[in-house]
Amino acid sequence: MLDYLNPHPRGWQNPVTARASAALPAAGAWDASPTEFFCSGARWIQIQFTYTQGGQNQGAFDWQLESSIYAVAANVPAGAGEWAEPSIFSGGAVALGADTQSRDQQEYITYGSKGVAAETFTFGPVELDRVIERLRIPARESADGDVANPGTLAIVVEMW
Image 1 (spheres, one colour):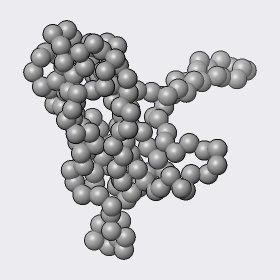
Image 2 (cartoon, one colour):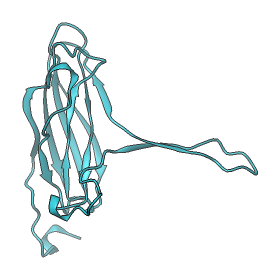
Image 3 (cartoon, one colour):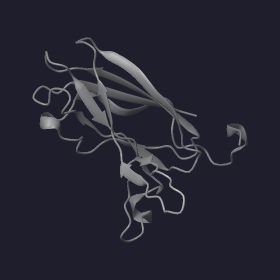
């Protein structure tokens, strides 16, 4: 539907700061309270990361795109999770006359820096197809980086 024909105003304005520029948590811990933001009505997102390694060693960070199909925590049914991590799927081998076992597992992504200067890159576009209500993007200094000297990370999202 065209935005100007939508009777419901969107709950966001571009760009959305998903993580203000700051040092990643110490010792490789995930962000304790990642910024959550509304994305209801958005069909696509593009994520822009700016990372600067913290020490002289190779820097790297991990991140996840967590989504919620619930507009508010009060809507989550008893026993259900409010936030979902992305998953990755691997199809099993197919043999005639036998069932196939595939595998599905939660996924996070690691980015490794090339040098000491700030590096900006994009991920996406990611299709939401207007069914996701909220997003958040937790991050941490990766074990592939330098957890003793966490880098600085900013995350900005554009939605349409």
